[in-house]
Amino acid sequence: MKICPHCGGEIRDSVVRCTHCRRNLRDGEIDLATAPAASPPGTASAPSSRTQPVAASFATAPSVTVEPPPKPAPAPFGSAPPRDAWSTAPPTSALSNPSTHRAIPNSRRAFGPDMWMLWAGMAATVAGVLAFLAVKEPWAHLTITQPATDTVDALVVEVTVRGHAAFVGTVGTVLAVVLAASGLLWFFYGFQRGWSMPGILNPALSILVTVAGLGVALLSTMVWFVWRDAMIARAENVGFTTREMTQLLDQQPIPIVVIERLPGLISFGGMMMLGLFASCLGWWAYRRRS
Image 1 (cartoon, rainbow, N blue to C red):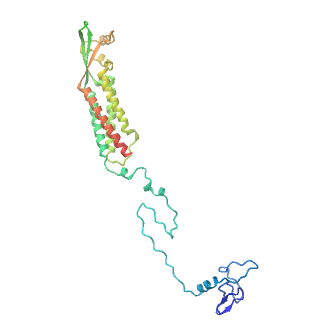
Image 2 (spheres, helix red, strand yellow):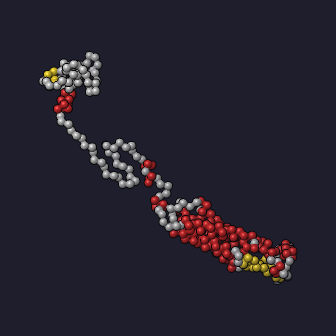
Image 3 (cartoon, rainbow, N blue to C red):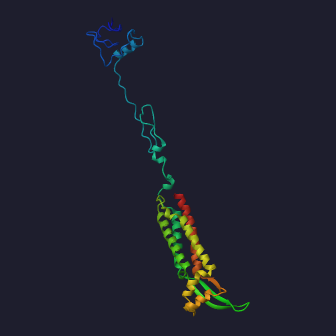
């Protein structure tokens, strides 16, 4: 063993470069890649007691091959990868996984027929078509009487009118077409519950349509003024001229008009009730899939 003339460290006789200060013992050069930081002036350069055995062990110890850690098993699809001491990936959040923030839950996005919407669409379509056909049927039988004495009324004329002959019938036709078209589209969207329905097909609108249809049917049985134009147009069929029928309806006191409901009006009201039930069922199914 010998002493390094530069740092005073103990080294073996065969060493030509000090293992402590890395100085060349032959010409005094310093290995810049491995030399330790220079000590400030006035500081002893003797190595510590812990440095000497560590450096000596590195000089004499055989080389050791470090095997990389085993790769972890692949994580299930959709789950965050496990973090360990060897992982350098940044932490993941719940928002980075698309399965955790779907717009619609998986149970509602599942594809397949929506039986409730299919039934609602079928019922609404049938109700709209039958209501449209009922408008062409006789709706009311109007009997016009005038008081002959204090206790007896004299029959003046009787008129049977169809639904499409008056304005209420035209409104009923429009409502029936809207109901049938809505039901047909509900039936189409009922084949796949994952399809998004546009807002215009919201069954709540059809509920308003059927309520309006029921209002038309009720108005046609309570107020005879809605049949005024139809009665004047059919004056010649009952032996009156158009002018005579107009004068009869405008005279004072107002003549008594008795309205008798006919099968066409009853059928129209019944189909509007069926359409209302179908619309409520469709609205419930629509809420489940939205």
